[in-house]
Image (cartoon, rainbow, N blue to C red; front, side, top):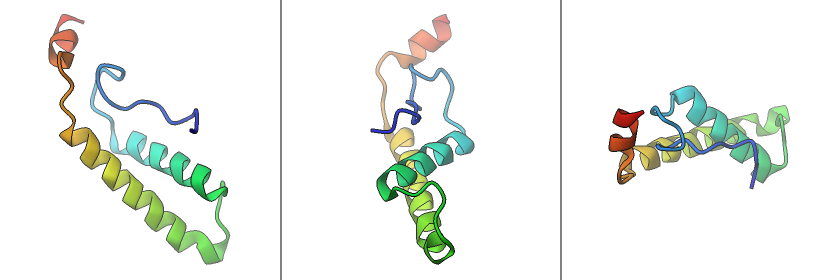
Length: 77
């Protein structure tokens, strides 16, 4: 997978991921899958929709994950 996409969940990342971090990860994913760093004008809309969909799914995933022991580790750190 794309090495520039970082893990956004605790305890790897001590604080909640920001919207900017989630969108950056989504953008990297869509770039990797599509093979385009920047889409041509005729592909821009579908590219942006894909980034938004991946960002939304990522935010939903992060909100729903239960990471056992993460709260205790954060409090101790």
